[in-house]
Image 1 (tube, rainbow, N blue to C red):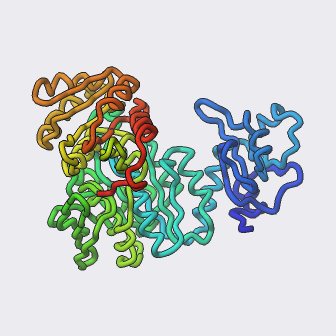
Image 2 (image 1 turned 90 degrees about the vertical axis):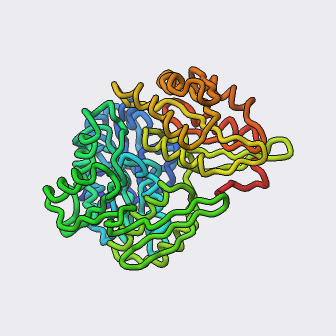
Image 3 (image 1 turned 60 degrees about the horizontal axis):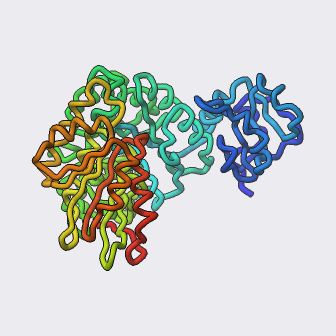
Length: 477
């Protein structure tokens, strides 16, 4: 059995007080009593909605080797006889353990932030660098005040590459997180109008993302998108933070890591990129120009940490989109099929445009339609009506004539489109599910895109439940 943490190291890092018959160490860390595995430690974090201490008994029953609990909650745990490590504050103990994991690690560490593409870029780094050595990376979108320290604390000592996603909704959220991670390379994928309702404008978003520079390891590298209009703000912020090594990626001819060309096809996508003086030709497993742009940042980061670029390149060719982030399904209907593009995880104006581009490049079957199934973009604040209405332009430019939209904010897009396309508008996700299930036809290509909490992902689930996979394969063209 391989231990993630020995008991002495765990106690030293968390400043905990041991109670009971403690194990020699732990094999993992969990904050979810439902999914904990035998041998792991359960950290009873108090969240916004639930307190982990209320589930300590369940975690113990499910095999937790150790419970990390707060001193103040100890009386409420009653007669629970499980091995415990008692600390003043459980979240702070997790943070301290994460910092200890970073201190002991010899890994090359890469941190990723940005308004669009964080998780996709993180997953591409995980997949690509795995061809070069052991990789530890954030699970799902564990990018906040508990997800980052949890990911750090779970990092094995012998990790070769650490990849961390760092997110934010407001200013001053990235700063403390990146100071835990202390990356050797910090990537900002792009700046766009995400969480716009929490900021005065897009330049403020750029400055909030630029907090990532403040935690770079000495001699570390910033990797910035030269195609983004906010690049000068980011470059200035990096230099103000004392970053000596600022690198660029993008299609701009002056970019150090350059996207030379991207060709999207019905069956294959090919990327040409200039990396470290080499021109690389890479068949891309994941479709979309926005994916190719993120792939160039991945290649650049791999170059900066000294990874084997040829191995990274071959790994990228087998990369497939994650669920909710552009994954494609070919589903049987009658004697034919239709194609579903699941991009339902989240949405902002930039990622909406990327999804529309994916739909534009997709090839319908005979008599099929390209259909945009779009729901509200949330956290747009006072800008909401404008940014929703502005989607009419990219839809028209892409030649999308069938537009199925739902949610109160999408009413602005409905009005902006008018009679220029075939629009079906519904008030919410439930009404849209009912409509979509009955309206889809053989040969259609649908992209489903919306902010996560609108429930539009349930449209995807409903389609997958009703229609079986065609030839038991997922479509990747």
